[in-house]
Amino acid sequence: MAKRIEVSDLDIFYGNFKAVEQVDMTIEPRSVTALIGPSGCGKSTFLRSLNRMHEVVPGGRVTGKVVMDGDDLYGVGVDPVAVRRQVGMVFQRPNPFPTMSIYDNVAAGVKLNGGRMRKADLDELVEQTLRGANLWEEVKDRLGRPGSSLSGGQQQRLCIARAIAVKPAVLLMDEPCSALDPISTLAIEDLMHQLKAEFTIVIVTHNMQQAARVSDRTGFFNIAGTGQPGKLIEMDDTQRIFSNPKVKATEDYITGRFG
Amino acid sequence: MTTITPPRAPVTSSLTSGVLPKWAPWAVVSGSLSVGLVGGLGLGLALPLSLVIGVLLVMVALPAVSWQVEGGRRAKDRFVTVLVSLAFALAMLPLLSLMITVTQNGIHRFDGTFLSSDMRGVLGEGGGALHAIVGTLMITGAAALISVPVGVMCAVYLVEYGKGRLARWVTLLVDVMTGIPSIVAGLFAFAFFAIFFGPSIRFGLGGAVALSVLMVPVVVRSVEEMLKLVPNELREASYALGVPKWRTVLRVVLRTAAPGIATGVTIAIARVIGETAPLLIITGSTTATNWNLFDGRMSSLPIFTYYSYSIPGARPEFGVERAWAAALTLFVIVMGLNLVARLISRFFSLPTSR
Image 1 (cartoon, helix red, strand yellow):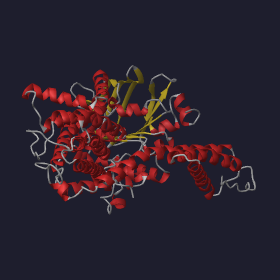
Image 2 (cartoon, rainbow over the protein chains, first blue to last red):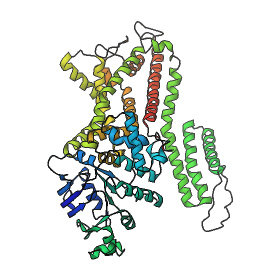
Image 3 (cartoon, each protein chain N blue to C red):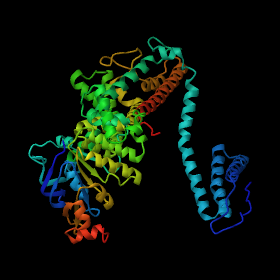
Image 4 (cartoon, rainbow over the protein chains, first blue to last red):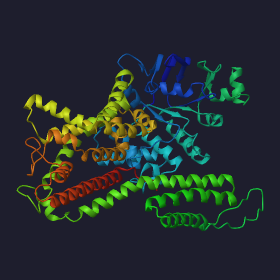
């Protein structure tokens, strides 16, 4: 199911302001790709352009190509809704639907889309998904409780479960652990290791240790100054980036000399 | 004045200061009030004036005592506390007075006969408000049926879809509509239906239309606020699952805002249920119970109250009694509506965490 994404010549705008410039990048299937860089350099904006969530923001638009297994996501007549069914997303802050139970949150992708499923099939899907998100053992006795009754880390795993329940090809994660404590962070990182067998995962993180721990490839974004567009400076295997980067700015950033 | 100034508390560090004991403010308040009352009444002033003097005394005495013991900042705090409590009392006074008066005067005729019979053929004693109750409930219900869908959809447009000039115009028009005098709404409905049915048209649905003109802007405003309160994260979470926008609005946004919408709708209903002027024009008044919204004059509680009081008939005392009882009935209906809104909003409310 996992798919390769090829980004070429991508510029991203907010109205007339160019936020990200000239990104060329290949995201490999069945791997974790981490995006690092200082605040405001456009990592999250870039991530949101991969499932056409960027254009939800008023004035948000994109030029260039994002090709997923041969299909241009920004091609003529492409339905953003269809793209988002293929490319799921997990957000910085856990955001389970407050009106729904744990069970309904996992089933939300199916139910909100008006899908009809036999109860037994849906039960099966929910259990499989929650097991996949390492949450089943913790919540199996209280599936009817509201999603907001869980702890922050559990809520974030619930959101991951909700995202993978619709069986996307790619999973985007926008700083998924920045609101969580170290134990919950570890649980999510373990989960990423398991999930990359099935999905293409792209994660934005401010935590360089996390990027080093979980990712196979790392991209470093930087910004020349306030008001300037962010750029992809360097992209390579994670080991190479963290041990022997080609660009000076990358080395400065990961050794903590700036940012 | 019976003010007690306890000795300044021993200052033990740079952070401690004198504190009035718990009972002291109350003692000062009751002391000042009684001094004002006794003094004022003793001088032969009226009770309300003496009360005002007492309150003024409280406003002087409590900060003064506090200044002595606790210092300037606490004294100001006490002064503002008195001001705020006073404002609250002033706001509550008319409401309480209204409730007590209406209940006292209306309870006498608020009985089974009153609720179950109309005024057909009644000249003196007896009679009831069934025709008016039925009219009020049916007209207001129809008005709600018209304005809730229109109002909710308009609010959804403004919050979720509307951009640019059209949305700004709609917002402006809604604001203007909020200020329409109710009699104009009645005239509008009358003028509108007179085009089709001639100038002698009187019927319940026309009243419902007039009331919706008043109700729609209130619904739009309150629902708009509620929709704005729904966090954007929930919309994004839904989009990210590949849910189309219209389903997101329907199943996530409206569902999350449902308790607030229920409350807003009830407030809007309560706002129009007591309207008299527009109904006077377009629904007219009658003494018989009319169950048909589409044909014939219909009475309603406010109009029944008005006529029972202004044209009480041969035996005025019974008419006035009925007027009070009808006012009480309207009161009870509005109270009941608020109760129902509470229940609905609890039913829809977000499941509490833990």
